[in-house]
Each structure stands twice: as structure tokens, then as C-alpha cells.
Length: 446
Image 1 (cartoon, rainbow, N blue to C red):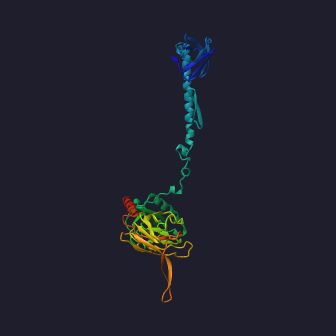
Image 2: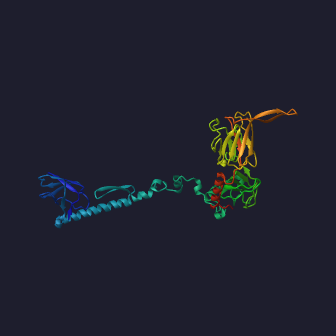
Image 3: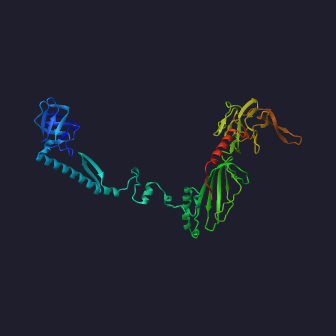
């Protein structure tokens, strides 16, 4: 049996190894072993001392010196003698005893344990110490030894300890998150005036509907693309079941409120729908006042001469001699002559509500002209602007009338409220979005 790991160099009586491990447990390298250096001619030495994993003392001294990188062999066959065999057995038993002692320390240790394997020191935690340690979140644990500490370590609030009341939410009709939120309101039962509440706690749940059906109600049917329903139960006797619904509709945000007390868990009725006015369904006129809006166009003399930086505010884009909001996307505006403008691509002036606003003084001094519109034979709109002219009537009244044609002042614009064709860009996009939402599964409300 021989040992040939790595290479060696010998200078005098010092053997230096590269890639060797002369002290490895179980290697059987010991004093008296023969070392054969593969030189030409071969040189033979005997080990007199083991200094380290890469250092031996040998005899006789090398002559000539053996260069680095020389292959070698250490003969371990001395174990065939009685003395050598006894030493080999003793060394082997010592190695295994050292390993078993180290493993016992690992299994029973209450702190870190260092053991040496094949000459390499390894530090591992004792198994008993692991049982007492809480793994950090980075290690796959919670960083705590109890439930409360674990929730804190994971960043969970007190709602993590709430159970959903299946009696209060039959059939899992609501989103789980909504049920947990509602259950958190159980604490209100402990307030003085609510001590008698035993079956139904105060609470609130919500359900989300998606679809394209109509609302109905006093203001007519509006197609909606998303609805949020809020419902609260008041007490065990059914004294109150009031709901609110908030929907994103084709005409902007709208809401409606339940009609009051409803016995038990019956579906509530609703009052008239109310519109919430926002940037979606209003427009800012040239004097800064707000007007109900739908498709809106703003006409100026030209983009180059316009002095108002807000004529193309967010939501409006240029379309020739003017801008249009998203609902009016696709129209074109051009100037034909002094005070004469043509708008094409719409379905005409709005069929209800206001239609035209003349240029307004941004300083709040009122109208800057008189505006009128007519439908052209090709389906477009011709919009004309005139100076204001005041006449004294036969009855002595001052009457405002049209004067000479004039272009839109550079510091203002004409507002035009439109209807758009069914196949307009906005209407087509809205129809596709509504159809897509209708095809998605809805959350059913009780």
C-alpha cells in the first residue's frame, strides 16, 4: 500500500509537499515509512519526523536536491511487521475515537462544536442549541419562539388572529379579505349601548361586481364597468341593512344609497342615482368655470398664435385649430376665414345640456364675442364668432347682437360640447372594455 497524493521537493533532510496531507487521519503515514523520490536515478529516504500536512523530515539528506514537482511514493507496507501493524491499528482506532467523540459533542452540545475531519477544522452548532434557537426570517423561520412573536416577526397585525364567522358570511359569498375586515368589528359588541347584541356584530362587508348591465333608477340606465358595494348589518333583530353602491359608469363616477331599514338579510332597495362630478365628467371653460362635460372641443385661431397654456391641459390633445378631450378623439378643426371654423368627425352638437360657449375673458370680465353653429350638408359643424354689438330697441332696451366677424382672441377659446358617433374611438374602446369585463367572473352578492 502506497501514498502518492501531490508532489514533493527535498532539500537536505527537509521534504516539502505540494497538494499533500501527511497528517490526514487514517493515512497510516508515520515515522519509519519509506519515501521513494521518482528521480533518475531514484532516491530512497526514511521518515524521521512528521512536521505538518506538507512537511516531513527524512534521512539521509538528499544529494543532489530534489526539485519541486517531483512525483513520489510513501510505502505503507511496513504494517506487515508486528510492530508496524500495531501502530496502524492504534492510529486507526484513535482516528475513529476522535470522530465519535466529535459527533457525540455535536449531538449533545448546547453551543457551537468544532471537530477536525481529515485535518480540516469544522464548526457546527450543537443539536441541543438548535432546539433553543429561533430561526430568523432569512433562515426560513419567524425569528420568535411563540405565536405572538412570530406574527410580529412576519409583520402581521391583529387581524391575523381573527376567524371568519361562517354563520355571518354564509356560502362564502364575499371575498375572504372582506369577511375578515367585517369580523374585526366584533369588538364593538363590548360598547355600552351594544351589549345586547349577541348574534350579529356590527360590521361592514364589501363585494365587487364586474359587468355591463344597467343601474336604472331615477336618472336612467347607465352602463357601468365596475361597482363597489358597501353593506352594514346593525343588530340581531334585523334593524338595519343599509347599502351604498359606487360605480364607474359611462358618464363618470356615480353612487346611490339604500332606502333605509331593511328587515333581516333581505336585499336592499335603492334611491335615485347621484353623479359625482370630477375631471372625467366636467370641463373647465375659458374663464375657469366648470361645466358638465362629455365630448368637448376647444377652438382657437391657431396653435401657433394661442397664448393659453391650459388649452391642451391633461386630457386634451391638439386636433388642428383647437384641442379635444379623450371622448372627442378623432375630430378635426380647421379655420376657413376670419371667425369661421369647421369641425368634422362628430355627430353634431350635444343633444342635451349646453352646446356652445363663446370665448370668455380669463380675468372674469365676461364674454368676448357671440358664437353660433350650424350643421353642414357633409355632416360637419360650421362655427362662427362675431364681435358683440349692442342696439337700442324701440322699447328702449339695450339688445346684444352680432357684429363683425372676429377670430378667437389669443387668450381664450370657444367651448363646443358634442355628440360622437357610435363607432368613434372612445365609444369603440369603451364597448370593448365593457365586453371584456362582462366576460370575467363576478363576485355574487347575497
